[in-house]
Length: 388
Ligand SMILES: *Cc1c(COP(=O)(O)O)cnc(C)c1O
Image (cartoon, rainbow, N blue to C red; front, side):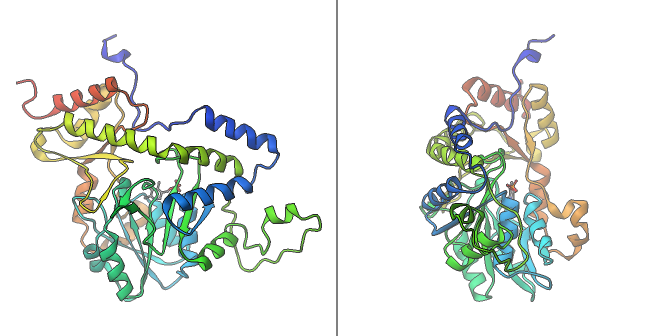
């Protein structure tokens, strides 16, 4: 067995969970109330305060939050919703759930995000909403997008699944959209196992999301439980069961408290990559845009032809060294589920280039100096002219 083979494997991501989460869970178990209840309410209040937004509605995932965001915005059959193809498939799927048509737009090659220009190129006469994504945590430039959408009376939904802790012009992202959605999947910065949140400054939309997530019952299960003579409930429209549990929310509260420390560590790791990979030809690294800061949910690199090894070749070299990287963000229009839509979309050349050439490197709280050193030296050894 070679010396390399005994090195511990480095994952691309590992959630940071500890004793505090275990204690918080034990407390909920002991309370006997494990479904949506007081912990969900507390998590919502703390999350809204952290994001500087008026209302937060906890749900079972970011995908279900996207579905509810489109419902409260009144999007349905006959409507077009412009979305980036360069995103996790859930962004486009939510549009399909409500019977509307996703129309794909391209992204800015520097940030991987939608811009007012790429959105404008994809607008149709039936466009009633857009879903813009802070891809990999990199904040998008919302103000020009807001101006464009206000002019055309188009709702702006921000898919901030990866973006907790990122900032736009000095404030947390998400607050400037009509509605924003967040993910607590373990691949993201904070986790509740599975879970999501919808945030908005509109009281009417928050109220409708709260009832839709709970079968559109006129009285919540938690409220019925606390009154001895349970009032009869009325089902106002066809709703869903998209609730978060108090077990998940208790973990979320602890995780939210860890956010400043998690962000510091991720930004340190990113700085270490930037220093360690400096001077390599043909390797472009993700960075903060001029108007904001990223949480480095993903640290991605674009592998250009001048690097000497292809993106897939570099992935193999990393895998041989026990390092698990990931191909960059997917492109929905290239998937069988959406191939019907590929021809109807605006030019997607930047999307395709980023999809073909980017690679996501490991970033997680407990990634140590030994691991970082191994990743950096493996990449340096794969560069053109290495070892000469
Ligand atoms: C992860 C992700 C989602 C889906 O989040 P879930 O909580 O797993 O449903 C949606 N949009 C984007 C951009 C994502 O990265």
